[in-house]
Image 1 (tube, helix red, strand yellow):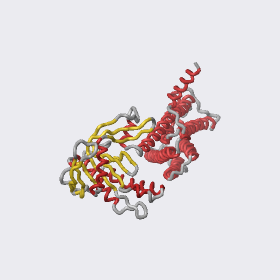
Image 2: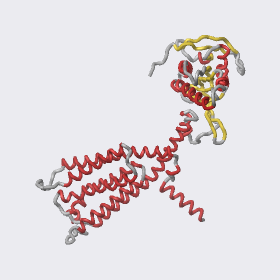
Image 3: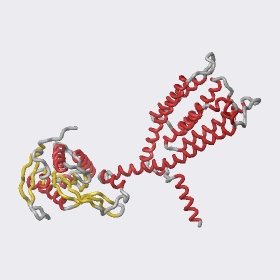
Length: 457
């Protein structure tokens, strides 16, 4: 019975407050991401406040003046000027990301204090008893000040602004009641209240309750929204991290999928496969320290990843010093065959003359083949990865190895050549070979020149 009550209580709490995320358990990088969003929001809040100040000023300028023009002191322009200076200072601090929490609390109180001061000054400006300002429609701007605090995605500042507004209005009412003890101006007649400077306590109570209710509802909604914000930041970070291990297109599919990252579901697609390998890498690796080797490989992978990505390819695997990339899977590309060849030529041009250590250069051999493959997530338990499988993948790897026999850098299969317009590249036929595991001979070619280079961006 107790367990059921506890469960129902927890469910009610989740329904009211939403999912509970504790900021303190978030990684520093995620907390900084949330903080960055909040700091940007403070700039927007400051801009809105400036717009409110200018609105006040415009309304004051165009409104007919019913007070005596010979008055020595007009308080409204002074209050507006003070509020403008404060808003400009706040905007400057927000732009320079120098608004600590205590400053935000102070700003909440100062905003309300300045608005209350503006409302309070109306009875002086218009030479009326203090109860006159209690009916000023400017009170409605209190709700705007409370609402814009929601942009910070932290209910604390909504609450601080709302409570300040409620306390401020209580003080405004108390001032009216005590400033002239001989004439409290209190009435219970609603008509008299609406047609005179009398004070209806119930009406002022309704205003205070409305301020507190709006504050409470907005703070509750914001608490739930903050949970969604944190969840969104977590999922966005996870997506970015996931895209480092699997292609971005696959990561997006996993995020949007109802089932998540499920292994064993593959898609058969036509694509062009590009396989690269470093010539004599084993011998080269023996001349480098482990640190130098990793640094050289990372630089090499970064270099060749550029052309592959530039021409629409996706790296599916890093295998030692080898790279397996696909064009048209998982990223659609109608010109996948020609783009794969262009990427290969660009890789060779980019590596020409580049050293990965003192006197060390990497000569890369590339095989290119077009055919059907099966692409999908593979693995077990919590460890999965994206890859492509099939006979055409194996054939591409063997084409890469044939470069050793022909003294070439790039070998292209006849199936890839069939997908490319004849006027696009200059190919040289190398002959017909029987590849192990394939029941038919294939013709192979090397590419020597791009006859129609793509326009530079």
